[in-house]
Image (cartoon, rainbow, N blue to C red; front, side, top):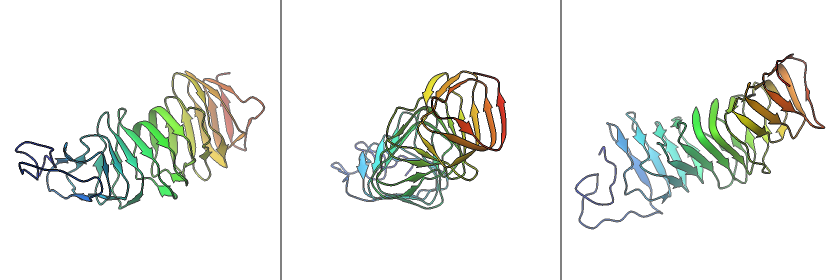
Amino acid sequence: NAAGIQSSGATGSVQTNSRGFSSTANYVYNGSTTQVTGTGLPANVNNLTINNSSGVTLSGSTQVNGNLSLVSGLSIGSDNTLTINGTVSGSGGLTGGQYSGLSVTGSGDLYMPAISTLKQLSLNRAGTAYLGSDLVIHNTLDLYTDLALNGYTLTLLGTVPTRNGVLIAGGNSSLVVDGNGQVILPGISSTLKDLTIGADSIVTTQSVITVTDSFVNNGSIDVGTYGVTGSGSSVNNGT
């Protein structure tokens, strides 16, 4: 049903006079036309399976405590936050946007689904989260725990509150800071392929950063007692 499951009314897959949907139940969306999850989907669910090639969009913020099975793609939706508190399986990706949030909690290492754009990303998981694609974050990157770039490019257009988490670089991993104002970078372990600072960005580092290919500074960077080192090229058009 295109309307998913609704909390009331003569619409959706369930249309009984009295209806309730458990937060410990499993939910499967396997329609053949575009679907929304519906207002009846609890804010917390056990397993959530997305198997609709036409697309499924969350109707509200949702936390998945069991397995998020992405046989096909899931759109988080504007002003919604998807919280992954369990595991992820399947080859489908996530669609975010500059008004969509993603939170990763729970325990164990987690390879994130591909997602290109988010308003905010929060990591507070007993384990390392690994990017599954290049990612642009428009607002906030909140690292209570570690994020591995996993060979992809992370672009920061907003802020990074000071937490305990670090960025784990390595391989072809790159970082772009291109917001308007002050950004205090988390610690960065291993090497970056490229580091780019935008013209309106004022960056402060909290670790030595090693760049193997290209370091371009068009803004301002304060390395404090650390530094930017490496064997690649360097272009400094800023301060």
